[in-house]
Each structure stands twice: as C-alpha cells, then as structure tokens.
Length: 311
Ligand code: GDP
Ligand code: ZN
Image (cartoon, rainbow, N blue to C red):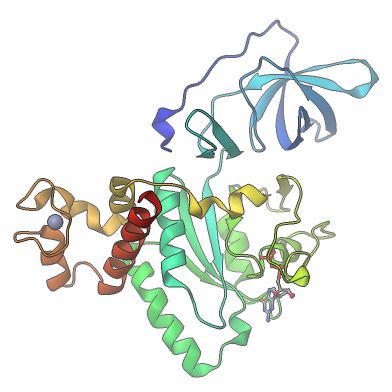
C-alpha cells in the first residue's frame, strides 16, 4: 500500500482545539500527550478520520480531565496494511525509520531481512538493519556475518550490530534514533523488547514475554509510543511486527530492491520477467556484478512465493 494512495480529510474544527500526540489506542479510546507532556485519556470521535499511534491529533478537553479526539494533522508517513479489499488497518503514523531487527544464531535469515526491506520501501519509510545478539558470535561467525551484511551496506542501507548484554552498538543505535520516530520490526525472540528496555530507563516493557511461552504467539497487547531521553520515539506494536508479511505485487517487489531500479526499464522486452529472457538488463547487471547474486536469489524467492499464494 503506497503512501500516495492516502487521502487526508481535514477535521471540522470549532476553535479551542488543542494539539497532542497519540501515544496509544484501545478501541474507541486513545491516550494523548498534551503540550505540557501530560497523558490524557480521550474518546475518539466516531465520524473522525481514523487515527493511529504516532498521529498528531486535534483534541478538545472535557470535564473530569478527559477529552475528545477530533482528527489528525497531516501525516509524514503511514504504516498500514490492507485488512481486506476495502479496509486499511492502520499500524503507526509519522515514522521516520523502520528498524529491522534480526539475530543469530542459528543463522541470519537474509531473505527475511530482504522482505522487510521491500516492505519498508513500499511504504517509503527508511529501513535500518539491526543485527542484535552479536555477543553470541565467535570470530569465524563474525566474519561470515560481516560478509552477509556488506551486501546491504553496499546497497546503501545503514547496518548496526548490537547486544543488549554487552551494550555494544547501543550508543550508535541511540544516536540514529535521536529526534526520530521509529518502529522495531522482526521475528519474535530477536530482542526487540530487550532493546527498548535497554534504551529506556525504568522501562515498562516485559522482556521474553513472548518467547517464554514458546509458541511464538503475540501476547503483546496494544501499540505504544515510548519517548527516549534523547528526543527520539520508539513505537512497539504487534501489528508492526507482522508487517513484513503484507501482500505485495510483483512490481512492488522489483522496485523494493532499490539497486535494481536503474535497470528495470532497460530490458529488451517490456514484459520481461528478468529470468532467462534475452536482453534482460537485470541479468546483465548480475553478470557485471552491479547486482548481487544473493539479493537476486531473494527477489526470485519472494516473487515465487507470491505466485504460490495466488494459485
Ligand atoms: P522480542 O520477542 O523480539 O521482543 O525479544 P525479547 O527482547 O523478548 O528477547 C528474547 C530473548 O533474547 C530474551 O531471553 C532476551 O534476554 C534475549 N536477548 C535479547 N537481546 C540479547 C542480546 O543482545 N544477546 C543475548 N545473548 N540475548 C539477548
Ligand atoms: Zn529483464
């Protein structure tokens, strides 16, 4: 789902509205942070354009210290996925970056990271690759992981190695997050909650809640925005965690491999599938090493998984 398909409905304002930051929602209720930094529980007006965590909202105070949310200000970005043919499920608004978290062992799933990269490109939000649990790697594993990571680095993606045990890389991550709003994505057990706890003094996040149950099921409840001491915000959401599995079409996937873009429209045949056709510019780029073999293999796998899903 591309950002350009979104429409913005200006809420009806009456004067006296205030602005706030929506930090969490549950049903028709949202918690906003007002300009003084206080949390106020608000009812979300029924006919308002739907709002989501991360939105800057217009709200009206009520008696008893509660309020009403009337709508949202224009968004910088929106993470959403199609719930069905007619409805979008909103996940988070105004993200500056998506932090793709993964962790060895046993191995780094390159295809999984590529899927998240494609999904991030599709919503035009900058992805960052965070390899957590680097404390578990021995020297030879470190070397091979370094090689794997170099492909993404060459493509231009920021890559950070981290450990919540030794605190390696946490300063680098924290510096990146400064004054940005970001969401962590990645499989359960890679250490997302631990990372949030490590960055938040006195955190309320429960580490190991999901993995301890063993089933890999998400027991986490609502989406929440956390303030970092350095002016950054982290959004933790069960929905964000699943967003890499969105339905995407073939052209989205192709364009999601950003280093393929210069070659896409230069094939001999307009309907080139970038397989074994003659005059394929992507194949040519592979031969001249302008495109990495491993990334190309991921592309083919992701496209073929789409075909299977549709048939
Ligand atoms: P989440 O499901 O992605 O939120 O993962 P958790 O934060 O719950 O972490 C899953 C498990 O990995 C927990 O037992 C953590 O203590 C452990 N863990 C998290 N970060 C690290 C790390 O950097 N190194 C090591 N060795 N273990 C970690
Ligand atoms: Zn081609």
